[in-house]
Image (cartoon, helix red, strand yellow):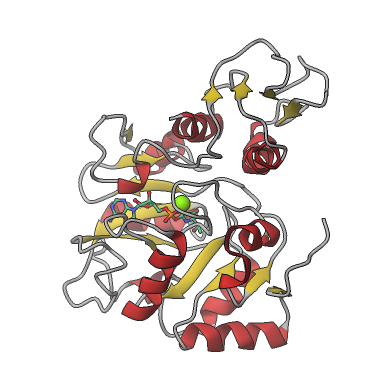
Length: 317
Ligand code: TXA
Ligand code: MG
């Protein structure tokens, strides 16, 4: 697709120093990560965080994830525990977010953590964002770069379409590797998955050598972002469908249905990683084509398929 957005910029030495300057001045920048694209701002600055909430029209009670370059950088803000260190060693940098106790002395603005005593932290594994973060002496608050409750962006153009010229700078880092948001694991008590992602509960269980539950309870105060409607293209969605209906979009997986005008395939090769990477792109495409209904075939509930099912379920709400 042609880039008509002048605020999308290639990553090089010049844009690196421009990005660093912008962030130091508490402006907001669209940045790539390995999961989805995010809106980045100085986590120590109340004015920067205010801009993020207002751009996204995000409710103030929904806290942001604080992103760090490495473990040492995170120490001033978190209470470290054993489970966290074990998972960090095996999985970071990578697509996982940890909920930990926030240090009383932390300088993170309480606006970013919605006044909670806990903090969500993540160490993104993307060359571009790592080179930017290395030059900063503050962590970045980075929610997904979409309007609140909408579909997360997986490339720079998606970000531009969400915010147009309201963002002065979006760094183009190509397509996000995973295409789904990070796994969120609460480590403030017994380890609990609040949001499934590319890193599975089994993998976390194996590293910690203990059972890790997926939080399925209806009361989801702990993860405000897992509020019912989320990740939504704003079109009615039906899950576990088997029939193609004329004039309605059908999202399929595997070889069962051939490509047609209203059939969109997540992965012809039944590859769940590929499906995860394509899900939000296909939602966006269907929305642009102005379909009024989406039907989705059953997606296998294993590996990253669990996260795909989670996002589809939320989108359908
Ligand atoms: O992959 C990702 O995590 C992306 C990229 C950009 O890093 N970011 C992302 O951020 O998905 P966001 O803001 O779209 O989702 C953050 C989630 C929300 O569900 C929020 O409620 C939850 O993390 N969260 C943040 N702080 C929390 C806390 N202290 N306790 C429980 N949940 C928290
Ligand atoms: Mg989000």
